Length: 359
Image 1: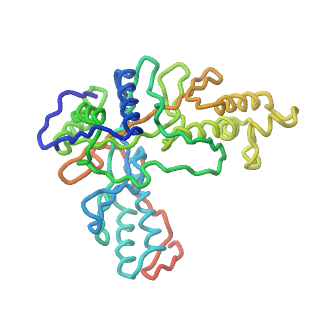
Image 2: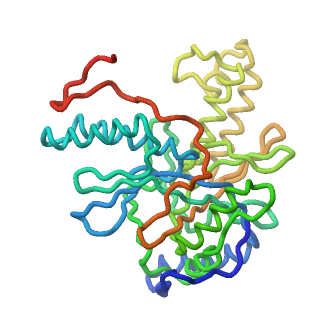
Image 3: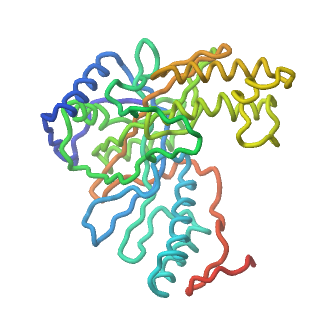
């Protein structure tokens, strides 16, 4: 990747506002400290989601499918499901249901990146995923990243979802550190020979066609390293605690099952804690006790780094940038890879909302 001087072409002016609210000022100071600690960044690749622009709500774009999918088709499939369930449960007339089902039919057979249905434009959108890095590795959570007063480790609890309610606004005023980051990344593009020529060409073209940059809210994920580079060990989460909770779940429930320490037929409430605290004659009880002890260390406080069995696990603060042009957010590029084809996801639905049988 390269991040040279931005060609300002048709780029918008960046409007900078100085934070005056005490909380916001603390967040900005934290961002300044983070910039001093991290000297570079690591780009992982593109992510995809879906945004909608409703004529009745004005020109803004609202994220309706989180920008976290690693493949454009995954985002299209999520849009397919949203429109199908809207046709099933929310359509107010046959005409509206018919229009929604026509869009679903296209998504079942075509790689469609933009649709218009009943006054709403739906677009598959693209963002670049990256993380800042420094002497100690990838950037971790910041002191001002939101944390619960009382952490809830329950498996069934649901916290905020990534990009829930997010409205994209390329003209919104930004803080000084956000402005500097936007300027630094305006000309970000793929340049190395290890990238295919088509990927490099699309990347250069994107800088001209979508010259602005919108920074999306950070996400948090678990990364791991044994001897090589850091690799993801979880999905993306909206909060630091949700990422910690996912690591706790993996240590005590998921990994014991995937590694044969607990039978996949075991009851849902059986995990490393319940087994290790019970009969010592249980197979693998000693190893499960180690898993439980590691998870207990994670619960001892706001722990963002954990070593277990020669592997280091860390909560990483992940950033995303979206390119923006005269017509809004960038969509998938021709060189972006689809790992699957469009398929039918739901049973037939007629214009009266009646579910039919599969043909």
